[in-house]
Structures are given as structure tokens and as C-alpha cells.
Length: 516
Image 1 (spheres, one colour):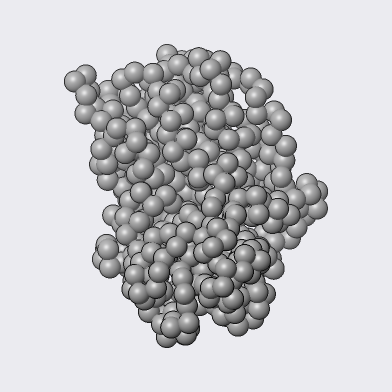
Image 2 (tube, helix red, strand yellow):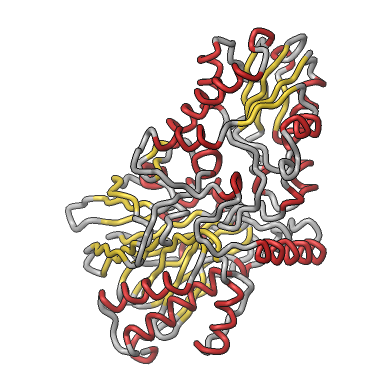
């Protein structure tokens, strides 16, 4: 999970991209980067750290141009914070390209081998995003035959990417001297939405991971990029859409609606906030069937993602809703912190109890999901320490029993508390008196009843069914083995951010005549 932006505007875009990254900061806290283009030259600054720390005034001054892309990186456990892994990525042949990617490729090793043996391209990092960039560059070279690009060449190259790359990818690309390209994998696993700002001069276009970025930056939502579809905005600000996949099927990641996206976003025609309200309604029905509702004195959410579901659950069950935890907003989201020890330490730094809401009460805690169980266990202990007589727990999502390989940091089965455990056993693990999980069908219904066009989802972390069809047991074993090796090499994966203030801005010069 990362945040990406691409914009074609009439005025300098550096501030626009910075503001957009701030809105998408929840999608990635490990690193950030912006690349802009002016007079066929690229300008880029990227570094580990939060957006506000990566970009200073001096960095913004060297990001000229009216078109650009931006990225905030989601950390992967076992990976060091490294400027080389930060995005965007750049390649100069056969055409100058700068790319930002949200998602995860599942055939990276195969593609790396093809790059070396067949395409004769060098991959400088372990990032699958750099691999994807080089696949696109090669396909552009093949389709254009070394000459100037046109729309058919560009869309043919995206079709080539779809044929070769497996997994999840939402992508924005700058092509120096040509325009802005954006595309989404044939299953639409990761979100991508297009917005327009009509001006007196000519329309401006913005592509982003979530619609909230469009809203806050003054763009009107045009539509979502369809699965397998590509959008190219040329230098005259004319948008061109084309379907580039042979058999696209919209199967968005269902976890976006549960946890990842901001509640004020709309993804594939579904309000995330409304979906979470409906999750609360369905969860309330299951709680009523499985818990002694008459014994519950108060419903308390675990801030922030679970609030809509908890409010709706409390209303449906006629139980008082209270805010029992106060959140320190200057601590990052524990789910996307890279190391288990860091996550555990940060829980108590992030949350504190309002004692009177727990003292002498039987409480029902509602969270959006339970992944590793670290946060849940700590929170139950905090509730009991605050004087709760009983602590019941409800999850707005089903138990996470399987790895996610499409860009969410939960790749090993051993880390998932629900793997191999019953609900009663999970309840004992986190210290709750009883535990209720959402049913998967209820989760799907909560979304599809808002937009009936959505009938299939990637629910792999809940049901173990991977929509791309290429994820095998051997693949999962290899991912887990590699992850364990990296964790051993880099400790808990929490790299230092002391280089975030370093000025590594640089101009990437490109002359289209010589590069062709």
C-alpha cells in the first residue's frame, strides 16, 4: 500500500503534489518523493521519512514544471529505509520515464531474470517497482521501434506490461516531452481515480490513489481508472483512455474499505465511510447472536478506522457509544510500522484510556480488524487496567488467516494471530472475555449493496484465494523465507530517518533527440 499522484496542470505543480502527499500520508510513512518535468528535463527529490520531513523549502524550489508525479512509500518488514528504494524511479532509455507504483508484483524474480537475459536491462535495487519501470521502458522500445511515440505505441506498451507483469499495480508515469501516463492492473486490485479542474486556459488533470486527494486539491472526480485501462494526458492536456488488458475483471482489494483508505474517499463508486457504517450494522447482528448484549454497558471504538462501524453497531443494539481511548496523532499507524517490537511499543504511546468510561463497566471494544494481535492484546490490557469488569471484542473484518501479497505488509502466516486458531483461541490470546468476527459474506455485502457493480473482490487475506491465479504454496513459502532472511539482516526493519533532511535534489537531464 502506497500513495501515488500524477498531475498535468497549467502552473507549477510542486506545491500541489506536496499537498496531495500530505493527504495520502496514511498510505505510506516510510519515504516520499516528487518528480517534475520542465523543458524535457526531470527534477526529483526523494528520501526516507514523512512528507513534512522530506521536503523543505530548498527542495521545493528545485522542482519546477507544470507536470509531475509523487509517491509516499509503505514500509515492508525487514526492509531498511533506503533512498535507493524510495520512489519515483527513473530510466532514460529509450524515452525518459519517471514512475511511481502502488501495489506489489508477484512475478518479480521471473521478470528480473528476463530483464537480464532477454531485455538487457540492469535493475539497481530489489524493488519490484524498478522492475515494472524497466518492463514498461522495454515495451515502449519494442512498440515504438526506437522512433517517436504516439498513442498506439503507448497503449501497446501498457498492454505488454499487462501480459508480462502479475500482481497488483496502480501506476503513474511521466514521459518526458510527451505527457502523463496512468494505468491499473487487469484486476483493479489497488485504487486509482482521475479528477479534472476546468480552468479558463485549459483543463488540468490529476490522478491519485484516493478521491480525497482530488477533493482537497480542488479537482472534480471524473471517474476511476478501470481495471486494465490506461489514461494518457498529452502535452495539450487532452485525455485519452484505452482498455489495454485482454480480459479485465474488477476485483478491488476489500481491505481498502476495511482499513487502508480514508473514510472520506470514494473507491470504485463506494463511499468508504458508508461501507464502514454498513459493516457496523452487519457486525451488530452477529454480536446479538453471539454475545450477551444485555450485559454490555458501553461500546468503545479503537480509533480511528473503526469509529463508523462502532457507532452504527451501538445504535443498532441500543447500547451507549463512548470514546474511551484518546489518540496521540503524532504517532504513526501501528499496522504499517515495520517491526513487531516497534509496533508493540508504539501502542501505548499512541493510545491512552479515559478512565471513567471503563471503571466498573462491561465494555465492547470494536476494531476494524485484527492482524497480528499486538494492538488488540495491549488494548485489552489497558481496558482492564482502567477498571473494566469485562472486555468483549468485536472485529469489523473477518479473521486474517492468509498472507497478502498485493502490497500489504502481512506476508507471513506465522505473524497472523488467526492462522491455525479458532475464535475462542484468539480471544484467549488477546485476553478478551469473548470475541466476534465479521462474516466474510457480510463484508462483501456491505460494499456490493452500495455499488452492485462490485461483485468480486480480492479477499485473499481472509479466504486464501488470490485473484491473479499465480500465487502458490511454494510462492508463499519463498516470500516468507526471504522475509525472515531480511529481518535477520536488518533487525526489526525500522531504519533510521536521519538522512531525511539531506538535500539530495537532483536534476535528471534528458535530451529527447539523443536518447531516441
